[in-house]
Image (cartoon, rainbow, N blue to C red; front, side, top):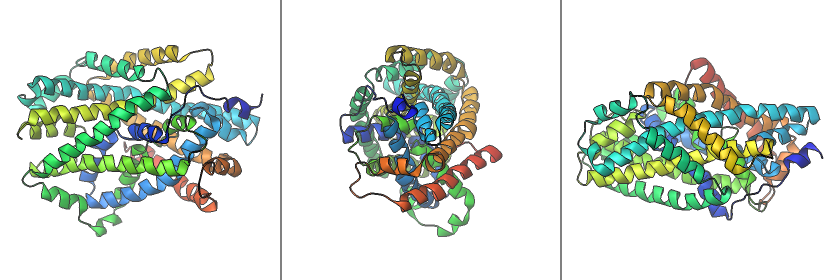
Length: 448
């Protein structure tokens, strides 16, 4: 059997509908990068200036980068390892084996970020529970956060719930991913819209809207605004050379991958903007730092919620949405690793793989709970592994894989075939963007 025939082996799972696929893909993209990452980076990089640059990269990366990952996954009918092998095998059997080895790095990136991600969602779940009991509404937010963030093993039960709960949603593959996201994603959007309406009633919130939407064109001359916007766009769309490939493998042949990539980007961007409409105006209303990063979730927002009418109710609503956002992203990280292991070792079934992922994630993750351990781990992943993985993916699709093979998959299901423009944008714009991001991360030690 040829390498291509091996990697074209049909998967045992698929999405039941386009809407289900889009919700699952949006769920992967919508996570902490949207809830606190986007508002924080927007807040520290000029507001509307950052937004302009970010939207440009979102349009570009969804058009070529995200659609390419969907396409290669669908063509290979498997996840990361098989897709890299297939992409490289067009250059010969030996090249295919090299590609299979190359795929391990972005796959490792997905696993490493899942371990760290599960830890931070555990803190979110802890905030949700403390909102339910009311203790978060009476505590000093800074002292409350320090009491759990600087103490080892402080959220172990919550960590177990997050990891085990997420893995249980993967037992049926794409079917259970689709069903869970059909609940989580609509609820997420509804909750944040409600919160945004409430924040709009705060005195002083208008200054936040001015900051977000009043153009300051001269600030676009700052190259770091573009760098930060580019990094945020990459990771907001989950274009890491790994994550979205597995969802593409579960996509029907009749779907237009460029079209569904655009729809994924649209809803992901709406989620980011709605989160920013909650956090940035609220920070302006209370004269708080809009670029505070993770502390926005655990210190800034609780301070605001303690001060407004029905704050406890809105705290419960907020942290519910953030748990959903985190779990939907974690689903993708676990699924891409689990599917690749099942592809590489076909005698291992899904239950065994998920149990293995549970042991690894909890075994490493519970020792990362003090925030001073979590931060360096996530910096390592976002400075080195993820940018390199994204670059390897971009190069593999547009410089190693045969053009005719990639274009055949891109145009499968497309109402209007794409041609040289799509391919050249990918090759000469998208790939250099990925390389620039990688170089900046490596040499400037910038964690995206």
